Image 1 (spheres, rainbow, N blue to C red):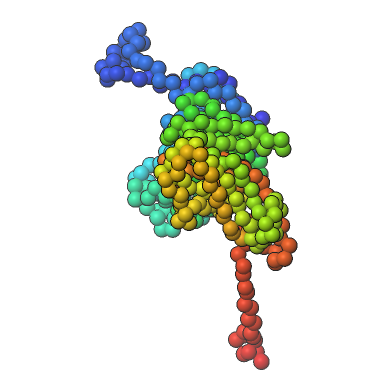
Image 2 (image 1 turned 90 degrees about the vertical axis):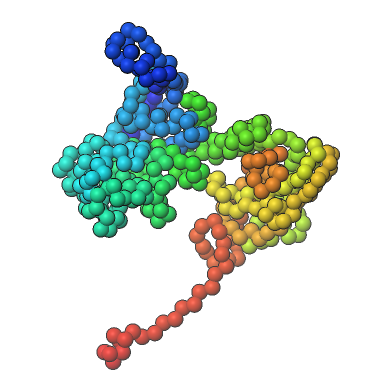
Length: 418
């Protein structure tokens, strides 16, 4: 099936030699004297991606993400298992692959296109489109060795996406491009996605992953640690980062309405109650755009603490951050607390949000970030709704009070005709 990906019991190992002479001894003996150890990069990978699906891959450096993408792209072969890929694959894995540094950008277009399976004549038909999309100006006729990494990314992406592929694989290569080209590239990726292209996307930019992908795979030590919705897996990975830094415990629980809540932390302080209060002092879950609200966080300490900071983060329904702050940034940290103390944090702010549903993530930390000392991090602590009842219609999640001035006058051309 076009765009379908199936991986069965995949494993990938590379030979590792203690000394260079050991490698030559093995080669010259035609393998009779094995002198290597197998270094397994991937093990027991079973994965199926449906045609038209957008799948995000995340994980620490060295987790096996790039190797997995190379297997799917056909750049390398698995040591065990089998890979079945349907349709044409366009992969942007490493900058400069398929390019010759002494040739110009224009001359490299047919060269790189052949590695993607196109003939010289086919790439000639799309060369002008590639040049136009890359927007390199006069540099398109300069040797590639004169290109910056961002310019290389522009050309590589433009060539790989000159024709809509059945499967598009994008590694971190786009992260080196400038902001304008990143927006332009994501727009093309979304267009391909809407047209039915299967997307495999690797990025450390969680917002980009949430925007493009409904499903996310978390790789760790060459294995699949989590496979689920973008929100669930990214929340778990965020907690995993804190766990690796501090040894915190991670809990994922399902709520009665089917939501998955991720909670992590050392437990030296704990949130016991989280709520939102409207301007009249009533607990509420529905607000009008622009209405004042107070986010209330009640906490207890279970150990002596040098510092205690509370934070809030509002996310849209896709899990993208909309607004976040904490008592450290607002210059209200609590200092030198004993065990058994209670603290109440109240964040008063206008709900300047567009219509829709939003979730609240809350945290207790030692300072401005949860990475150094995380006491309690609680994703999706509650969900609330916003409706635009009194303001002019607007698009997006942020409400920015706007005034417009309009002037109209007769043009000079009209005056001359008079």
